[in-house]
Image 1 (cartoon, rainbow, N blue to C red):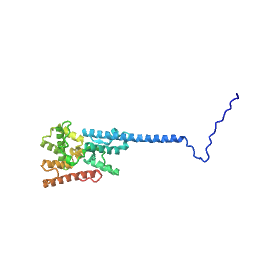
Image 2 (cartoon, rainbow, N blue to C red):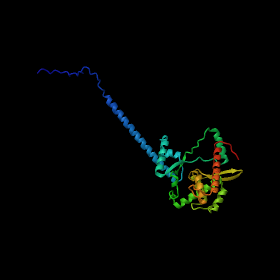
Image 3 (cartoon, helix red, strand yellow):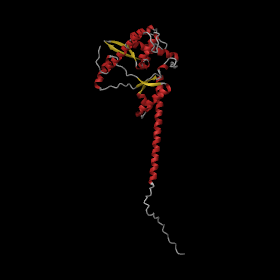
Image 4 (cartoon, rainbow, N blue to C red):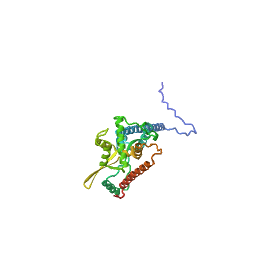
Length: 307
């Protein structure tokens, strides 16, 4: 047999008039990579949203734990215990936690007022620092939980005292710090230690109370922010004054003081007409107390000190 000849493979001839280019195979790879990138971005967005929701839940738990122990919610604790490396998400996480607290617990985080400069040395130091700073920050970056329920639900029948340690002990403690805050507020916003002892003696609480010994009870109120204790030496004599603390201003405030006075005198608490003379005196006293607080704040902001 004659040796077989190799046959050449037939070449494909494109038909005339067909100029459509053949799409390169790399287009399929490009489309695949773009779809994978889109899927990855969606997964990343979902993961970021889930992470933000987890931080919101952590902030709610932190706020409830701090309130249970009567501790303030500090910005530093939020950054270290909740946000971690995501400090830029503070605003979104804080707003989400506020919404969850209002909808689930009927509470919200309220910023505490900055501590006032009460002694002469503190006022002068604030005045000197104000001269070097163009604008001082008025934000304390500290919050506490407060009820967000409508006024008609803020009643003892609805908001019962906490059962920790017992409801009786909690009610007694609430009554004591509310009374002391009212006495200090009605006394012009400050009260000397001698006058405070005199009021406690009238209540037969100068040595002990249903909560604890009087000295330990006052120390607890100062620690938890209901009262502020200031010591200053003037002409070689140490003077101790008590003021309303930041938490006391939020939880009780002037409205709570007015309500306590009306309750003592048997007047209605819902704004119904009562003793007009007492209402007039109460309004005048609270206005004087507020003006003293405004004067203290103006001194801290750098205005002149008057004696």
